[in-house]
Image 1: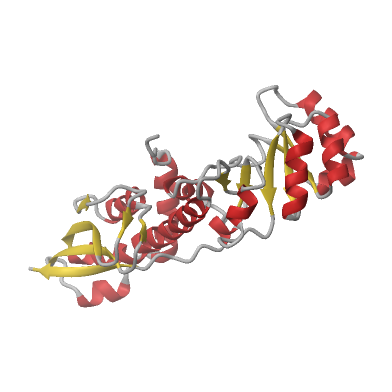
Image 2: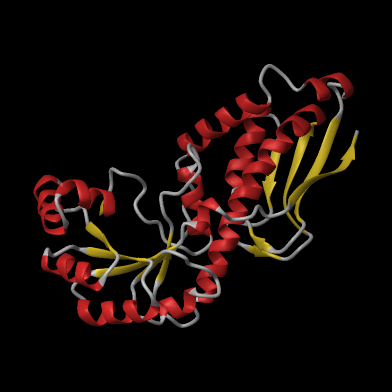
Length: 284
């Protein structure tokens, strides 16, 4: 399936806010030291191996700083590259290149880090059929881009927000009066197109969720043996999502229990940035 970038309106607004935060009324260092007539050509290089993501966002950063600049992507988002690979080139006024540099790299490093970690989790599954999914544990204001990076790494998006899926977690269940009451209330209130998922921590709660006819059940912090038993008890009646304490070392064993989905909050809240840099190749 082709990787579709986020809507350009979302990219533009996110970039606008980032530049307002970083540049403000002007880049005083660059304006004080670089002649306005100086031109420059630079290359964005990956200093380490990883999965590249965020090139359309970087392009928009340079465009908003100076729409006369030329930006050329040399790979596509979702491409796995070796260390020392040039992933993009930029050319234009030196002042504009320098002003846009940090913001463009911030997006590229962050999103490429998410895509790289996601690819590692997907690869760790081996032959298991489970899918790696993300969570809502994203940086405020960056969810659309971070979930795009998960897709670039080969993962699958969970719900985008509180508006496009029902997930009854422990606090909802406590307030709503339990699993049966919460599921029935949700079923009566939301469109039939929205999946209703229930979080459970024990096999008894799993049985309750199955009796309430939940569409999906999140197995929170269960042991491998509990997950295997949950798969047997469910027998395909609901999607099963494993969550909690997921690591690259553990994820394959979790997948082998037979669950359908494995959610990994670390994809977006703990992915290390991929090391990329912009190198000025020549000026004139």
